[in-house]
Image 1 (spheres, rainbow, N blue to C red):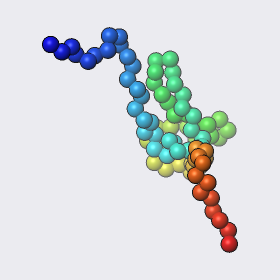
Image 2 (cartoon, rainbow, N blue to C red):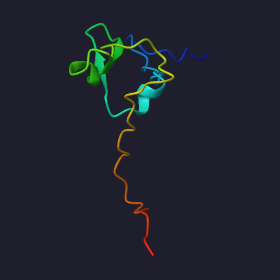
Image 3 (tube, one colour):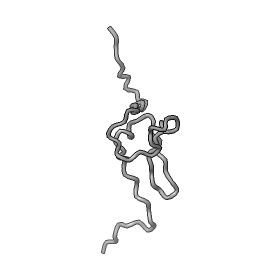
Image 4 (cartoon, rainbow, N blue to C red):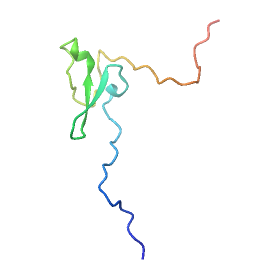
Length: 83
């Protein structure tokens, strides 16, 4: 007889990837996790400009304050070459 492959203790499943639209690649996004395990997308622009909601309704499809976040550092060295 085989035994079921369930863990002996309860485990928390990994969080699914965020689906916050533009916020996911915005330099002004800050992910905030509460004590119950929920994750929220905080717009840091809201700290200085009241026109931006602190926690926007997701997914954000258009935003005048969107700025692409800097890509993660990698050793590819793919830069523009001038002539």
